[in-house]
Amino acid sequence: MDIIKEKFEEIGLTKAAEIKEFLKANAEMQLGSYTLDSVVSGMKGIIGLITETSLLDAEEGIRFRGYSIPELREKLPRLEGTEEPLPEGLFYLMLTGKMPTYDEMYEVGSNWTKRAVVPKHVFETIDALPISTHPMTQFSIAIMAMQTESEFAAAYRKGVNKKDYWLYTFEDAMNLLARLPRVAAYIYRRTYKNNVHIEPNPKLDWAANFAHMLGYGESESFKELMRLYMVIHADHEGGNVSAHTTHLVGSALSDPYLAFSAAMNGLAGPLHGLANQEVIRWVLELQEALGGGKPSKQQIEDYINKTINEGKVVPGYGHAVLRKTDPRFIAQMNFAKKHMPNDELVNIVWDVYDVAPNILGSFKKIKNPWPNVDAHSGALLVHFGLKEYDFYTVMFGVSRALGVLTSLIWDRALGLALERPKSVTSDWLKNKISAQAK
Ligand code: HAX
Image (cartoon, rainbow, N blue to C red; front, side, top):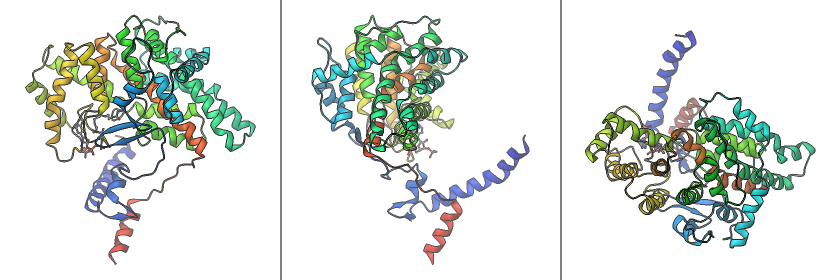
């Protein structure tokens, strides 16, 4: 073992155990208007951000500019003969706070179509990576490669007045949104479809065009799924890792490409967006362990217990804020009931939903035993043949761009400050407690 590694094991881990004990014993200690527990548990419950686009209620779930997911599905404009609203309309709503008319929604789509050309060097950058590179890494690097196009960075260098920052942030956000589906589809086709690419179809709406470039454009149901998927994954207020990262990095006046690429690195974590691939991996492993087929509820229960006993999390379950079944899970379940009620994998997901909350709920420490958005999304994609689960978080990322980039425009319009919370050492905390005791 490295000497320094041995030293850390000897000194660091002993100290870590001591600090953990101290933090637990003093969880209720007041630090201003909040407790030490809020700080230790990832700043849960501490209001430290302003995000205009959406607000999350622990019991009810997400509302975008005041509209719940069922209300959005009813009120946002949609194309004739389709049921799912278009993400173009949701973007308009999040940016302006007003429900768009059909024409206003349509203008957003036409605007993106005009901006959709991805510079050649971005594809060359992706092609330079080993084919085994995880799709999220390819995605993040591709976004960084596009940073050459940043109008914000160019304007800042010229010395633009700060009151105009939002203008250039807007341009970068719109260009990114226009181009991300093409970049994502390129990564998918390169990695899994022998590098055979499909040209965009400018006549299609944003989500349907993404479906088309991925190679699933023949299916009207898949296009509908993409519209739904892009709407429900778009935003989840400001504290989640991807939204918060965009805001944090953007607060240093790093341009939208830098901020969004950083956000995607956060989304790629298994406790956040990567959970959507982990769910399918977990279910497939369960099936493999049983020699294939549909597991019984008892077998699912045993597998959940095994997962927890091995010190792992059950992916797709739990949430830092939500305390009920995620309405984004319900929206996908309703979609599946309509389009694929007899699909085996979908039915396994529903069986997991029948048993997991009871088991997880029996552990006192687990605050939310209910499914989140990621518990369902993969099974829907597998149904249509999109089985390459390592790619799923990229799809989440394309959608998440809608919310976090809208918020970045608002950040610059509001002139929000550089983010710089105070941190302290555990010794500082100990001294503070001693002083309070005197
Ligand atoms: N399976 C097993 N244990 C779980 C659990 C789960 N699904 N959910 C929470 N726990 C455990 C935590 O690991 C933690 O254990 P330790 O104290 O030993 O560290 C304890 O219960 C308390 O956690 P919590 O307060 O209930 O939840 P957190 O706010 O700390 O974490 C997470 C929220 C979503 C990260 C957590 O529930 C989890 O790991 N879930 C599985 C991964 C997942 O589905 N992530 C996606 C979340 C939604 C999202 O961001 N999508 O992008």
